[in-house]
Amino acid sequence: MSHFFEMGGYAVFVWPAYAVTLAAIVLNIVWARRALARAREDARRRLAMRGEGP
Amino acid sequence: MTWTWFHRLGSPPYVYGLATRLTPWFAWPAALLILGGLWGGLVLAPPDYQQGDGFRIIYVHAPSAWMSLMVYTTMAIAAAVGLIWRIKVAHAVAASCAPIGASFTFAALVTGALWGQPMWGTYWEWDPRLTSELILLFLYLGYMGLRAGLEDTQRADRASAVLAVVGVVNVPIIHYSVTWWNSLHQAPSVMRLAKPTMAASMLVPLLMMLLGFTLFFGAVLLVRLRGEVLNRERSASWIREIVST
Image 1 (cartoon, rainbow over the protein chains, first blue to last red):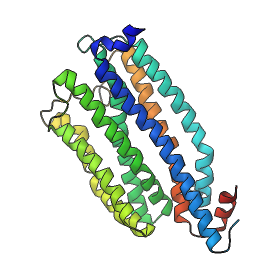
Image 2 (cartoon, rainbow over the protein chains, first blue to last red; image 1 turned 90 degrees about the vertical axis):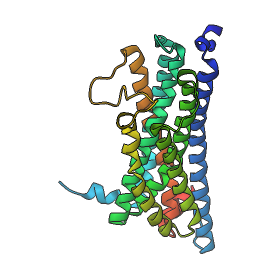
Image 3 (cartoon, rainbow over the protein chains, first blue to last red; image 1 turned 180 degrees about the vertical axis):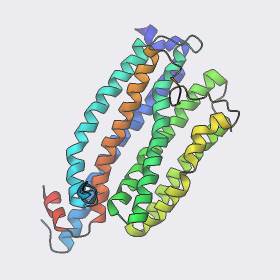
């Protein structure tokens, strides 16, 4: 198993590369969900201000 | 042939509902393909005869780089459609693309640097491929900055769309930079007209990652698109149902 993590001596390059890409994937999920939640909240507020709120 | 499907794609409530329904159909296959590609790339594929295990960076570098170009192309096409036919939903697609593309362009640059150091002996070189990819990151950031600086969504849509369309000239420059100029970067081994130059045990995980990332882009785009569509609707009655649930 430790042989696997050593990556033939390239561990210090391979694992950070995978970590950065994984971070891009996770952050994209988090940011997209947050942007949608904010847009819904803004829309709710707009409707409430016009007296049409739910 | 009828054009009703095309007209419906210009209708915000229809697009919002469609995006909601389609998201899982992109997200789950993306997750499975990426997990399978990771297994294949990190465990099953043999070490490269020259680069040893260092070559495994390809499984995150090439998909990130592919995303940087594919997302930009999508963004530019959507922006052009929005400019020409004045379709709000098209502008919403373009605006949704930018943060996704920027993050994967950043990942492509960092993973490329981490691959360059052991193989070329340098993290960075002002080389045609590397420089044009860095310009792509600045194009994304400029696009997002321009949008953030304009209060009025309609004006932001128009101005940023012009930037996106003009900037698309950089996409072929990046792709062909390794053939047009002498570059440290290797020539394409998969995205080429002739047969790929990789063994199947190395190629299949890469193709899984490329397809997985592409579907992931679809899923994230659809989630972002719903938010952008809501931002462009001021008081339409269909919104009331959506925000109240």
